[in-house]
Figure 1 (cartoon, rainbow over the protein chains, first blue to last red):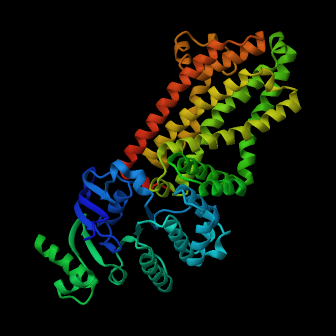
Figure 2: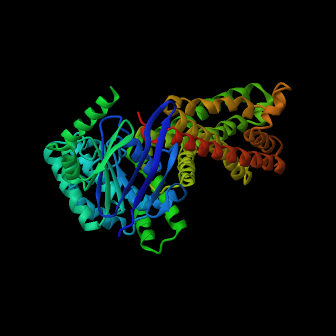
Figure 3: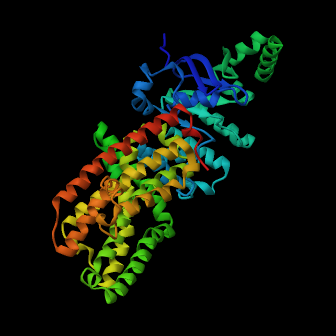
Length: 247
Length: 283
């Protein structure tokens, strides 16, 4: 049986009196797409930031690619990459310059060749000389994705990959990610509050609410268990249940 | 610029080891700043602007004083040399701090720190960028000093290399502390990048000997590497004597400053990770 590629155990992050992530545990297996699903403030971004080493957990343990993440952080980050709408690539640099810099940061062999292939695959060839700041949000998302795929990551973390995109571009991105994952045998962890996106993409869903895991299952499994039509209804039903339990 | 990128490409085709990867990452970070510099000629002009203006102003003061005082007539280059060398400290610090600020302004720190880049690689790259920017800035002023006032800073001879190294190290150390504070306190601390260095100016004794200071300030000045450099500079220009011990004392203090700078930078980085500040930084 496959070993998990990523294990999070009792992951907790407290910011003073606020608990942003509360004892979150999950395992992610290779060649899967897993979604962290939850509303605003559910702890998705903080969880991702901990998995990337940007935030130190208050408690808990992360194991990635069979190694303790904290003590092997830099080595492990060679095999990971990430994209988020909350971070930018430098606006004044051209797409080509930005991607070249990241290719060098990840010590890619033959960076020019890699860059050309990615630009072709993601349809950004004609923007290579354009400063990133002059691109539309759809084009910028593709460039951010190119940056995230530059090292062929074994684990790709995507924070709201289709946020603020029109439906057509969002669909193109989803199709591309599915294809890329199959071709590269990679694992994707995506954070989203777009239920239909998660339903279409993910093999497994980790539902978060107020920093806690409230359910883990496949989208189909969750829909069946809760007897609902779709994930959105499942999410609302769980939220309601919790709310009722509290009152 | 692309030749450097090409060089990196060739380098990347060869066998990989940790040091080569580190070198590539440092080059990537330097390359990013050079791309920015290349895209903005006002930035290049700005690098040379203040050193040149200051040098012109102090050159005129020197010309005036040379006509009225015997001492200044004998050592006319002291003020101009002071201006040029003090700018090494200032440019060294501001070059490093601004390179770090560039990453914050462009909300790029999250990308950088989620890559395999080690903090020490970032530190080295910031120092290289600062060295390049300082050389451009001071280079312009040195040329103007030579053309306008027939003052040749290279008359200081070989010790000039030691002076330059000591002063830029002091700038880097202060720059690293400021970069650390920026990481910890965000862009609210941005003004520190412009202001902190000026607190060191009076005690560095750029234009006057340390003995001029009040007795209680002299021990404090003795903790600043630049004060030894400027004493050494004056000894060469006035008495034509090079005091090795002054340079060594400055170097020793610089070593302490750099160690403190790196430690504070790393502690602030650790604190920023604990507080979840890195991926939130930006305008």
